[in-house]
Image (cartoon, rainbow, N blue to C red; front, side, top):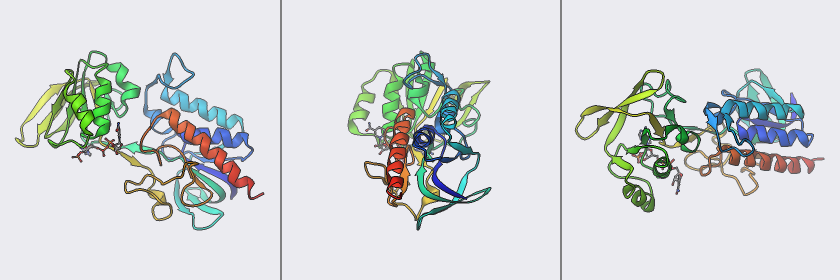
Length: 305
Ligand code: NAP
């Protein structure tokens, strides 16, 4: 099958790219991937996406984006691309249903928050376990919050969460933090923040929603059960770019290297969203990157004509 433009991924970046590409008559084919909608689709209430003053559910937002893209002719296939050959154009993609040749490609495969991998974590996602303070902090007004991690994200998001929580404990597995000095200083001087070092969460328990966690002190080996309603995990992200290893330039963490117009190291291959963005990580910024990538793809393909 021969295609002008393929988009891999169906989060805000991929779907926005699809809307713009379809409206530019590029007839895009979108590979939806393993989870339609990406990270935002596992978020319950989205209250910071412009245009929706009353908020909406993550899946509602992505369903609306999909409807909009399809209205303009974008085609969605419920498939995951599992092999690519970007060595020459047309690029070759293989999914479960067959092989495709594409003139241009937008990679919007996103990133997945690294999980702790402890019992209870997966079960309570959206019911007390969260990977996004901006999305979910509001639901924990006057509640006990635990933040896991020792990097900038944990400290910055922990500080943000003090707007809501009665107390925010930052639980970190070591007694030294990666977070920058200023963030550490701000956290240490915030009366709502408590730093719990040399400790990990062993288990998350509850009944319908998170009620407590079992904390383990790695120095003493002692465990204790601690009541808590919100567990926010910031232990890094994993970009979903393994598919492109060895074919596209990426940094040591796997984020795709792009120029300011979102061109990857291979002409005709563009990246949009958290596959390259290790910084902003918001639905609205990913949507913006999707728009930019589609506009660049359009420009690139018009040079072929
Ligand atoms: P990060 O710097 O990689 O920090 C991840 C933290 O999670 C580390 O403290 C790590 O512990 C801990 N961790 C990893 N796996 C764990 C596990 N399985 N269990 C428990 N803890 C675990 O990630 P990040 O904080 O998301 O930052 C990512 C990048 O964005 C960084 O370059 C950061 O500087 C940047 N950023 C900057 C700002 C800012 O400046 N305002 C804000 C956000 C992010 P160890 O320390 O023991 O390895």
